[in-house]
Amino acid sequence: MDYDRALYYTHRSEWDNLIVLMVRTKDHMLSKRIERFLHAYYFSRDYSLIERQLYSLLRYLEHAVSVTEEESIFENSPLVPI
Image 1 (cartoon, one colour):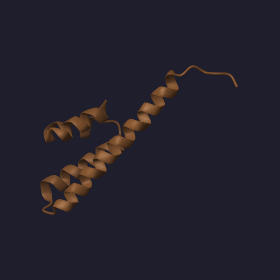
Image 2: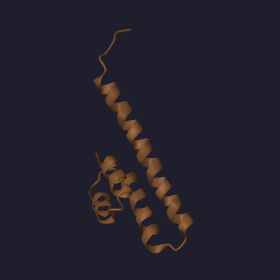
Image 3: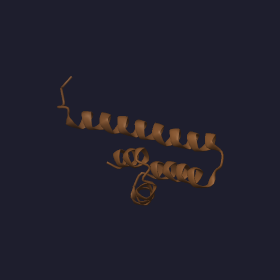
Image 4: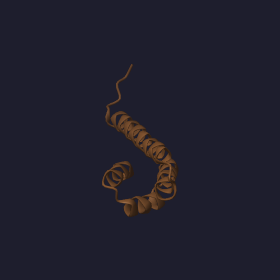
């Protein structure tokens, strides 16, 4: 759920909500990626750094969602004896 929210807030440029999510999430990697992106966004004048941090956050979100989907598939599949 946090990954969907992070993607939504990033897409909508809702930085205040992204900060709240950064503090509340239990995923430390997600929190760190959000922190790095927002720090670059607010304090860096180098657009390439901001872009790199944004893409890093988005790549992590994509990875986390795919891993979460795989886990839910395995949890919901019936056990088949070999």
